[in-house]
Length: 304
Image (cartoon, rainbow, N blue to C red):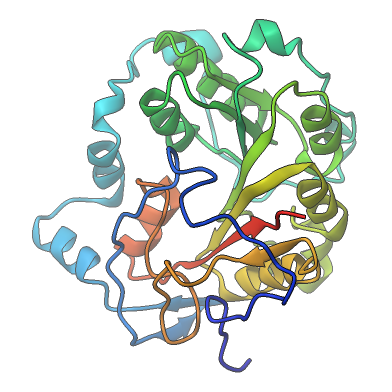
């Protein structure tokens, strides 16, 4: 596939990027993520001998235990969630073209959803269990709002239940097919769209199912067009093919959005070494426990 050089891309002559951290400095922070250059291919994923995985194995912790440990300060009450939303069985790969996912999610009354609906918004597409976004919302209660879009309804319901249990008024989770609902939802939001994250989306490995992948050109266009000047997009996957596909689609918008370079350390293939969000996603924890490499990219919209 050739060597990638994401962070070493030269900005266009007329490109104007905000200084690093100035756009979303309260939610984008650098947290080192241990990496290694050695890799082999196994079932479409590139695996590495991760020191994190080795250390975790030595401590005899399972990856679910590592997730619980990393998110321990959320203090989520897991005992009564099943009574509220029922048993949550996670289906790994959902067909977004199924009739049940073809109806756009209704736009909520944002002033009822958030305490202050004018705050800058971060949208996490495919928010999964929601703990990643809850962790961020708990640390930035008065400066940002957070919206999780999840195509698996029980996951969205459980995450919203946790948000209420934690008395967080700057976060909301919705059952939504982002490919259908993103544009209408974010265009109706009163405040600026500050950050969009797409983290370890469903890979849909079979070639005939690639059209089911969430990152397609219409969604990329909607993200870039709605993003505030200086706003950012963070993507990652433990599947190289998926990460490259996301990169290629966002690179097609290079007249409006550019890789953040200079301040970000990259590996020899050009992928971000560190997770800039301050905490790993659950999928990230599981993947790195297994020795997988995470392929990360961070973009910023130009100041036109």
